[in-house]
Image 1 (cartoon, rainbow, N blue to C red):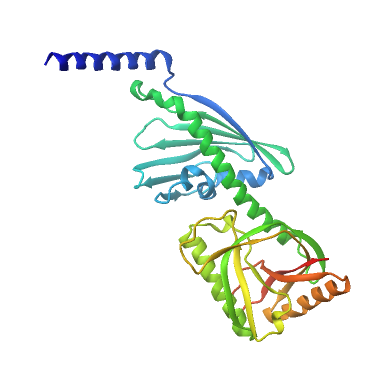
Image 2: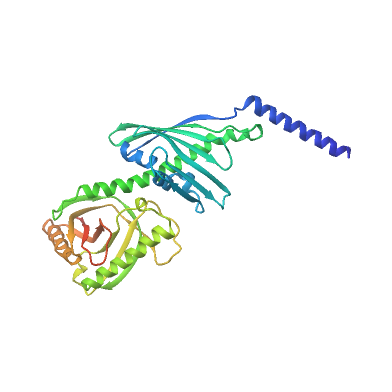
Amino acid sequence: MRFFKIIAVIIVLLIGAYSASMYYFVDESKDFKIEKEIDYPLEKVFLQFNNLQHFTRWNNFFTSSQSIDIDYYTPYEGQGSSISYVDPKNDTDGEMFIRYENPNKSLRYQLFEEKNESPTVVDVKFKAVSAEKTKITWVVHTPKLSVLRRVENFWTEDRFAENINKSMANLKNVLGNKVEKDNQMASIKYDSLMVENEEEKLLLGINVSTSNKTDALYKNIVMNYNKIYNYTTMDLGKKDDEFGFPMLITDADNYKDKEVSYFLGIPLSKKFGVTDNNFSFRTISPTQNYVMYYKGNYAGRVKAIQQLIQKAKKDEMRFNDIRQTFLERPTEDQDVNMKLSLSVFK
């Protein structure tokens, strides 16, 4: 009995010492600042922060959990917009608000986690370093914590910094795909032959062999694109701004064959485990391409492909595959809008 009394006294003394040290030496809340730069224009970056539907697609706080459920409330962007979230697997919930907005300059968020009545307040400031680079500064004020919980302030800043690092990588991928799509659409010159250098790409898609009858081939492409799109968005949970334009890869001159083999895929930023054996990853090496943009019925692409091949032969260039990039979603009974790229080399 005496032993237990001694243990109880020691525990009380330890709790007292801990509480006293927390009270006198650890602040009840914490303020810190984190700065980052990203190689995208200010206007495009700001739109990813003031629209909470965009924000939750790349911010690691929300993307790190597969079980989180988010409700969005009007207005969906800018001052007054808000969300609530529940994550049953991790037993967390909360609300987030945009309390202040100065367009393209600053935002103030309030985050209420679980039952805490005191919010985390985050002021985010944006500054254009150049036409293509933006500086982002987070100034964070954490909620007041009770004496017993103040130890959490020792790792709050590190945890927040880690979340920002992961979020910035996600944001770079999102903006990379959006900017690439915008630039491609803005640079289109139909039926003009150009030379381009194409960077390495990682595609998730399907290998297919099918009839080369015009209607049958295009219907087959539409069907397989829908399979890939549904798998990417529904099974993998990717959003449209997280991947690039769909690309079909096939032999340059197989338009003359009775049967066509092709790979159709969607560009993604990184490789991961795929549970469905119908889909696979394919890495496209950097190449120099002869390029033409084409708009019309799918059968009409053959004329453009022939022009690219004739140009390669005239320049005494060897060539490999033809890449058909669909700038608009391939849809049955509709014209295509595509970029045709013939990879060439000496």
